[in-house]
Every structure is written in C-alpha cells, then in structure tokens.
Image (tube, rainbow, N blue to C red; front, top):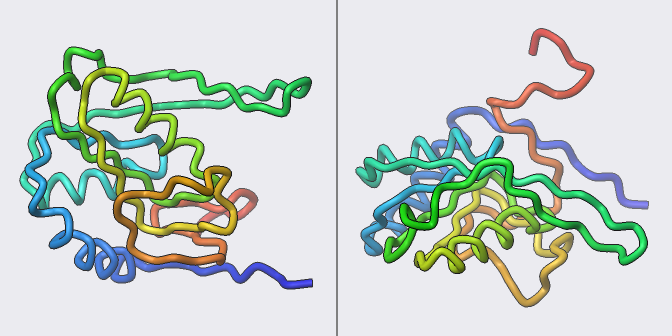
Amino acid sequence: MDSIKRIYLTWHDVDKIINTLTPRLMGYNYDIVLAITRGGIVPAAIFAERLNILQVLVASVDFYEDEEHDLDWPVFMQFPADSALRGKQVLIVDDIWDRGKQVVNVTERVNQAGGRPFSVVLHYKPHRSRFPDKSPDFFGVETSDWIIYPWEVERGVVGT
C-alpha cells in the first residue's frame, strides 16, 4: 500500500510556484480575482498584487451530501452578485485542485453570471479529480502528495 507523502511548503516554495505561474497569467487582462475560501485567499491576494488587479472578491462554497443519490450539492455561503461578474474576465484562485468540486462549481457559477472564468491553482491532483473531463486552466505543480501550505495549521498540532 502506497503511503501519501506529506509535503510542508515554505513561503519560498509558494513564491516559486506563483513566480512560475504569473507570466502565464499576464496576457489575459483580468478584471477580478475571485478567491475560493479558505485556501485560495492567500494566493489570490498575491496574484492580485503581482497582476495589478484591484478588485478581489470571495467565493465561499460548501457541499452537502445526498447519500441516496451519491451526490454533493454546492451551497454558496458567499458569492459576488451576478452584476459584479457579468462581462468580466474573472481569475478564480484556489490553493489546490484535489477533487475539483470547489473550482468546478465556482467556475460554473461565474459562467451563469455572464463572466468569463479562468482558474488557477498552485497544486493539481488529476488522479483524485471527480471531473476527468475538466482541469484548472493553469496550475503550478501536478502532485499526488498531501500538501501543507505555510498558512495552514494542521489539526491537532498546536504552535507550528
């Protein structure tokens, strides 16, 4: 049985990934950065700064399971008004695409609002994705490891 390797990233590691992604994002003239809570908030702020995007908004989505149909239903706890997204190029930012649920649902919601979504994640796990026909528009590193970002506190670990 393969054990999952835990990778503890430093701020320097994150900076390297963002530095690699930033030039690839520069040609798209985004109007808005849309951070997916919670993991996307820090990288979204950094991308907004590096790409000189003044408008940073937040999407908070939770999922409730329907065991009878084996589905997860998205519930948007916080999301910008459609009028804020309509006709805008929106850079959707999250830290990781694990199963892909958050990014896919936020992307669909931006499309419904009339925005033009582009997604970027620092890490992409295609082998775990629940959406084999979809992927982030941009990603820094493809991995199968368990990633711990410098802004995270592991559960059960105090003072790290």
